Image (cartoon, rainbow, N blue to C red; front, side, top):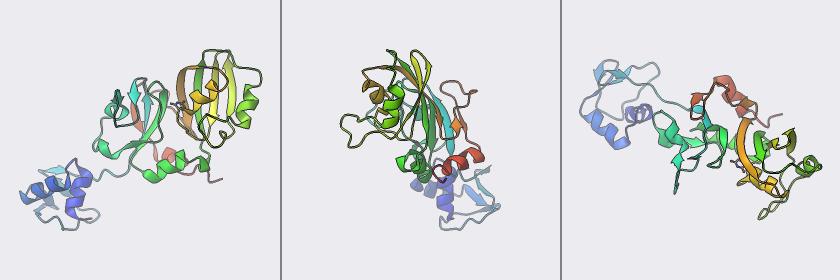
Length: 235
Ligand code: URA
C-alpha cells in the first residue's frame, strides 16, 4: 500500500493533511524519514508518525446497546446520532446495520463492512431479528396465525414475511422477523389495532445483545461472531 494511503488508513488524517505531514518529514518507515506518498509500505514495515507506531485500522464490527433518544440516521436529525456513543477513530466511515427508531432500545450493529451489512439486512438471507415489544392492549387469540401468514402493511406491495410471535405475558410479546421495513414491528402490531409502548431488540441472527453492556455501551465483536453473521442464509 502507498505510504500516503497507509497514513490515511491508520489515522484521522485526510489525503491532503497526510501529504503535508509527509512533506514535513514527520513520518519514518523502518527508521528512515520518507517524504514520498508513493513509497510502498510492505507487510511488517515499521511506520511511525512523530515516533508513534501506526497500525492500519481495518474493518470494524461493533455491537452497541442503543439507549432511547438516539438516532441511527446521520442527516437532518433532531436527536443525537448513535455514533456519538462510540469512542473510535474514523467514525465517519462507520454505518449502522439497518436502523432502530429513536425510541427503540437494544442491539444495533455498527461496521464499515458494506458486504457484511448487506448480508444481514437483505430479506433474501432470512436473518432473524428478535424484538421484545411492550404493548398497550392484550393480543387477540389468533395473533400468532396472523403474523405467520404475513401482514399487509399500508403502502407496501407485498405482505410481510412469516414472523414468529411468542407471548411473554399479557402485554409483552417477542417477535422474530426477517426483514426490516420502515417501523415494521410497530406497524405490524398497529395492524391489529394495538400500540407498541416500548421496543427492544434482543438478537440479530445468532448474536444476542451482550447482557454486560449497559445502555450506551459497546464492544467489538469477536472474529467468531463476525463470521457467524457473515454466514446467515448459507444453509
Ligand atoms: N421495527 C420498528 O417498528 N422499529 C424499530 O426500531 C425496529 C423494528
